[in-house]
Length: 545
Image 1 (cartoon, rainbow, N blue to C red):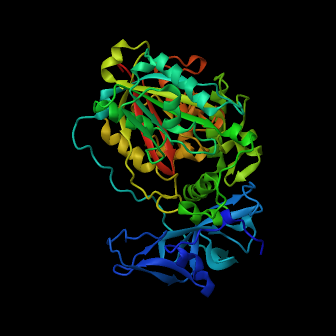
Image 2: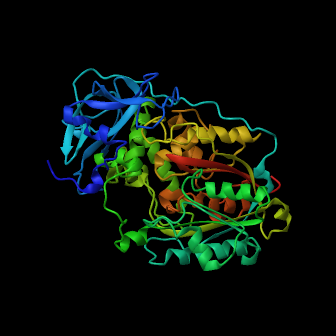
Image 3: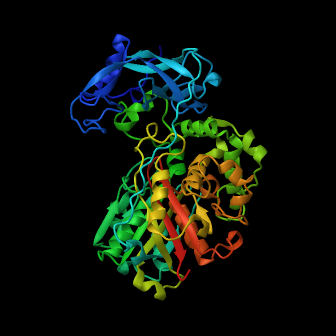
């Protein structure tokens, strides 16, 4: 068996070693509560059902059912030779306990939802990786329909959202491999946003960003870097990943303004992934997979495309849809990008072009995936009292949706849609008297085409599983359709600005400044960001709408 690199093996700790070494006896072990006997995975120190702190590793049969899978064709890691299958397997004893794993012992094209499989172990160094092979038993249909609690109702009629407005927006240059310092992109966007709001830097008393100062071409350095460059001396700052999606930095800023801590908060988001890759930069480290990645990386599931692709295949199976559904999302994005002079990809694309693209990880091909780019976008959140004094129409925040109603997991909980979409979408409508029919355009996060489908259904524009018929061959989401979606081309064609591009487009559209791609009489827009990890939704309106 080939030797694995460290990054493709899990870190053994006193808390998880029992799981990764159980295969030495040829048996699969799962955490079991000693009191209520609930099986739990991944391991946690408390039973989620009875809250007991007493648990033990428990041997299980090792039999299971494939409830999600993706045939990966992309060479993400030298440890895995495409094509190979990443699968989500529900164990026989509890359909709510699932493992991200590999299906082996058959042709990748033979793997399918409902397939019965049994565990076998691959031994690497001091680790026994549980993988699964088909048993040949009849397929089993497991009900994995979303099970969500009712969203929490607001405690009062007061809405913090109504005490702030979006007053300014700015963007740096956007493109592939700009070869510019990401902090310079951030400064460009910030200065433009402040000027757009009719303010000076001296007026800014708050800074907010997502995801903070992380690497891999996904940040300019966070609040620390921008404050050091601009020397604003803010009274409040916010930056990190554990927010309601990239738009969570806007929501947090609205809360700070609404509660009187700040008057004008500068929010920003910078990416420079294409330059990062062109420079040959790599993440530091080289150790074994730890934290959440230890449950996925050892099986070659190293990209969100793999994790979301498994759910997309479950959706297609459960609702009888085909890849054509995803194709209309991609074609619509490219058609809209043709009217956007700043979009990275503007050449026309047909549904035939979509199907002809090289595969990435099923059901996703190249055009199902968003476009890494370099850009920075900034938005100013201001006290609502300044709305009448701005150089441009103020954009009001009618409501936000932030509730986590699902497991924060890629393979547990919701697997028929992108996780962390349905709960936040439902929560939005508890905080407003508006309904989906009142929305004039939708800015839907489209890191992958399936993400946008999940948001369409989660927000109630159509029922779960009904997107194929509702889209009507893409006509309903076109610029002149009933619900224009991503008029700028989204991340699929304009470029992956990681959520903030949707905010910028919403502001431009609601101001009536979108030029050739302007949605007629646009007054209300819904903006989503994130998914998988906690997400957020904003319902925006032009002042006076």
